[in-house]
Image (cartoon, rainbow, N blue to C red; front, side, top):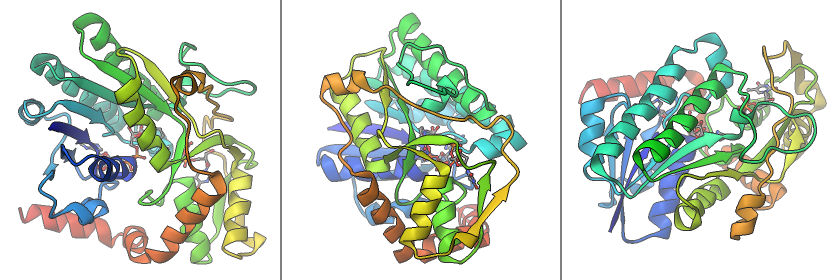
Length: 333
Ligand code: NAD
Ligand code: TYD
């Protein structure tokens, strides 16, 4: 029996990862430690509420006593907990520094003392910064340019230092932009899909020609599990989808699929310090035998369909009722 401590498991990728683990492995326990910030929603895992293998703990990864206590039970840590939205990091970087850097440090310190089997730090392709031509390999210099990506870089390198200095069995994954169900509708794809459904404008930053590499969230989860099973300790692994698209291509795809007019496109002021292009070279993972399994268009269609079928999930968030609801729920406990 392996016990996972998944942090940030009430968010987009964390909840998909817990679902992936519980569906794939019978003999696992999962503890989900999540602070329930605006981005966390325990309902993302309501299908496992009665599963004895799953336990939700509301708490902060910066809370040392709580983290120490949970770490005693854990064999494997997967650290997803983070402030994750670049635009918010521009407005108020404080929580990014606290959670993404200091929180990772608290987890690593606890892991060092309890001798766990594995610590997987979920990093991001954004740590490399922008690249006009070619693709980044794992050994390239890190040149993050937003408070978000700089905070993630701090955690990425602190995790590495705990491997080198203390022998904590760390692995680091750097994934490209995810999409799929339960994606918070402040990010490009879920925002544009839900706005288009509601006939609201789609705010395109700058010229719309910035490029991101897109990966279906289930492929990311599969890649993390693959790194755990087959990767080396102390290594970094790029996880890309091999689907580089301009934001305009994504916008056009969504409008066409939902049969909505071009007039919904709204050009707005660019994001300060907006990275032009992210691109990963994933040869290291390919050489180990891993590749993403989902076709981009099929996965996009599935994702759009999920938002069409689950309006109550995103309408609650977009109306703001969600936050009030959960504040009340947890103040009662
Ligand atoms: P998200 O914002 O949807 O979820 C983050 C979760 O972390 C939320 O449930 C939130 O409540 C929780 N959290 C925040 N602060 C916390 C704290 N102090 N203690 C405990 N829990 C806390 O983010 P996401 O898109 O699911 O991203 C998850 C991770 O994957 C992040 O580390 C992010 O940097 C990384 N990542 C994301 C992408 C992407 O495209 N979304 C790509 C590569 C890497
Ligand atoms: P985002 O989903 O915020 O991810 P990241 O910035 O971490 O890659 O944004 C993806 C791209 O879409 C990015 O180039 C910024 C752009 N974008 C818009 O044009 N309009 C929007 O409203 C948002 C949220 C993003």
